[in-house]
Length: 275
Image (cartoon, rainbow, N blue to C red; front, side):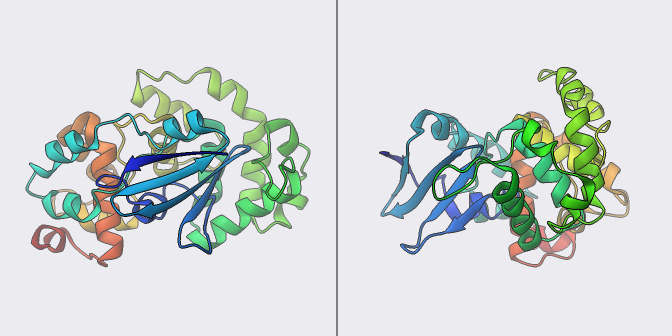
């Protein structure tokens, strides 16, 4: 296992892993975290001003944690927006992970109208039952493995009505993936809506967290509370306005606002500006 370091100024492990963009992680006995992606895992802990990372797949996780991107420049650009200053300062350690597209699709189908604890449990059970044994943990199940599950078997893992979505979408995934255009966020968003269980918010999450197309602004309950005004009174209006306002930085802005709003129990746009 190889070990390397990253600067902690713009990389907070807790903020990055617990901001709702990923679900296959756990705290470790030494106060750090272990995260899994596909059939790979990485251990992380903070020591002084450095993040210590250990994995057999260094190149994969260097890319996964987006370590070559200048988050200092991103936070500088976004903190210039008055409504974002407090949120950026509060959550500047968040990094947008470069997750595997396939795994992100099915993870976010599971996440719809669900809470973090249940999402993590369901995904772990999917891995344990259908994923390859990697020695001490199981990989995320490949499409041919997941397609072996019946709707009833998926329901037994706690998926409920989402079992049918998983069953259908694993069969539809190849044709949808073939139509993905990484240069066109709007076209990609529309294509993802063809998958069962993928609505506008889940599609935005997949675009941002599964494809790293940062011109994306998922609007969930916390984002809507933080951004809604008399004029921006629907999720679609919030999404469209802030996509236009922040452009290619919209996904980063969304994560700062989401984390700030959730951690501080923000209930209105006035609260986040005041913060």
